[in-house]
Image (cartoon, rainbow, N blue to C red):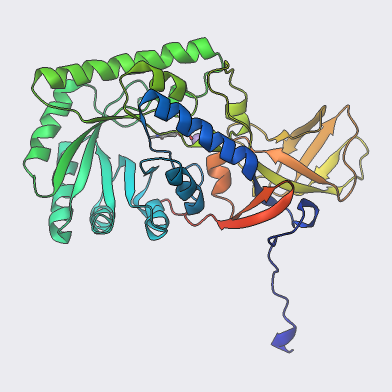
Length: 376
Ligand code: PLP
Ligand code: MN
């Protein structure tokens, strides 16, 4: 058997291809909608006098971060040290790890990365601070530190000001390695409350808890330069509230179906820019059209994908490699392309090697999802 007859997988798309020629399933970005989303978020942050540090865990794609920074973002958030590396390599030099980093190997990597870029990280444990300082000392680097406070999510973060003050004592014992930068106060449970009024009330409750900690630090003579937090569902309230001076929305650039199901007023509304392009692969049963994009192309833990631009057609059942489209409206024919709005953008990006960027239905660029799979 000769090896020169072995087929190689051609690229799913090439610059200049029309949408109809993209092989499926593919993750596609409508650049016009995406850029409008970036411009809107940046304009709102600028008008509020709040720094924008978009979360890169949503997309894991360095070109997205560079487009945000070109518009005025101060840097990015990453959730993991490994996730940050492709961004650092692409020239993103100001990265906040909006998460606790535990263990010698991860801390060594963080301290090493901090020799190349400016890094900050969250802590919620005094013992961890000492290990972070030791890792920085070994690398000869310096890291900015945020103490994370629990403002209602009940995930990471200390309970209140007394705990912050005792962690600050350990931070200040390592002035060569660590600098206290401020508080992280992220309330994830607020983001998908459907009613805008209920979302506002929950966001304000988190802000009030944050303000109480800032006031207690001030009373103790401690400046808190940065208060960071906020996500795509709550950011309009953090921008208006006067407590946060930095916000971290990630999904607002894309708007998945879960965020799309929130009620928004006219204040801040983003467009769907991210889609999974699928093809109809079976029409044996006339009551349904089977598409070739299932759980290996998009996550469904936050809800099923929405079928884009085909009123009355529903993505009814998801399985590993298939989706069952049903509904009263005429269903797409065998081979027809269908755009799906994924339920949750973050884990969906993590399933794809590349993002096919379209303008006016034509491929303009193909961006590597370079941090895909980097979750250490
Ligand atoms: N900041 C942190 C620490 C988060 O964990 C998240 C999302 O989980 C966000 C910000 C906001 O992300 P998004 O706007 O994509 O919901
Ligand atoms: Mn998310």
